[in-house]
Length: 338
Ligand SMILES: Cc1cc2nc3c(=O)[nH]c(=O)nc-3n(C[C@H](O)[C@H](O)[C@H](O)COP(=O)(O)OP(=O)(O)OC[C@H]3O[C@@H](n4cnc5c(N)ncnc54)[C@H](O)[C@@H]3O)c2cc1C
Figure 1 (cartoon, helix red, strand yellow):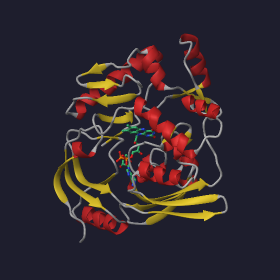
Figure 2 (cartoon, rainbow, N blue to C red):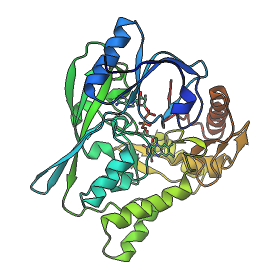
Figure 3 (spheres, rainbow, N blue to C red):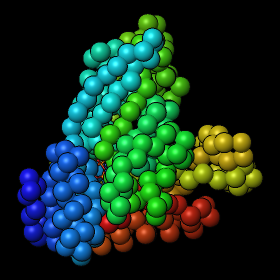
Figure 4 (cartoon, protein in one colour):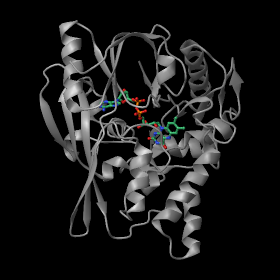
């Protein structure tokens, strides 16, 4: 066996929210072969396996994890060019922002709007990671994964991933059995700036915009909108932006002039929750027991000093209750509880 299984590892050291109790077993895997070995270990010892990337979208409970945490470090990055298209084959344990930086440095268009998002490539299909008008679902052509129960290896087409807003097949009970080993992105040699989103529009006024301009601007915007996750606890946006019917949105518009909405399919409207938390609930900057909604962007939860996940749970439940009381909307968490 090449893998080194550790016992009793604190999850707070492996999640960006900086909370979480002890995992019974913990192993780092650097290759698909090691992942298979780890799964073998789990089945032989009757332990539930759970794959972890950068831990940047997880709320790990104080009780810890009864099973085997598999820390994914499967690397590998290669490109093939076909006409104007560039296919990027990426090991699932690659750090997303390093991959984005590499593609940008080669002038391959597609991933630049996803600059500066923490975590690994393998987690991006799970919640269909997105930012500044781009979701990975628009770029992914194939996802390779291994079934943690049967050890079957399968390539999922984009359609089979069943992507929607912050959601995919990999979040379903069947999908959770699959551990992603490689993601294929289709990038482009043709310049395709996506500047429709919010403050990015101002870049258009500069005239010829380069792929570096876009990455640099997004890094700049994000350095204000998000706290430094190396220093304080955060998982970025803790809740999803709610998606409501057009009728519900009209009622909300009548009640709260100024509320914004973006089309989400034919009949639904997506509402920026940050605006609601700020302007309707008056919760921007609100703190309780060392947990706060970030001053610069109310959708972002910041763990300034809480040591326990239950403190974050209590805070998040309170925020959800206030939103429900003021708007009637049930908000959902973006962060996965483990
Ligand atoms: C400051 C900050 C800003 C953020 N901004 C954004 C943003 O703009 N847009 C956005 O969408 N997200 C954002 N996020 C959330 C987070 O970065 C993404 O969801 C990221 O993709 C999580 O990657 P990870 O490797 O840390 O996943 P983890 O947190 O380790 O895991 C998340 C979930 O995915 C599963 N998983 C992880 N790897 C695999 C795999 N290989 N196969 C199968 N399942 C897997 C885990 O089991 C878990 O359920 C932000 C987070 C922070 C802290």
